[in-house]
Image: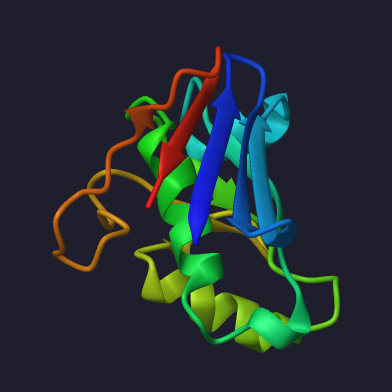
Length: 141
């Protein structure tokens, strides 16, 4: 399984690649909700707006790796997510994000990750991207 990441200051996307198929993808972008930033007492924060893994590829660690790759690109800023939607329960999503170091935030229904709440790697060696020769695209094993 390969993971390909593309990003800039407005958007970061990660795609899992298995042969010709993509079993999962995730993306995040800077959060622009002024009221929410004030409530969080933060100047800037990233927002995970999508983590999707095909049902037949779930429980294989793909979603975990996708989120970990996003966290590598957060530039030390906090990351928020609002679990819900798609075809798994909110309870399952909350458990998934909390296993990666996200905690409850002051905003109802949102979880937050900061470099001080969790490293997203469960104490394992940090997975850093390597250039693969394609402009703006980094690959992970």
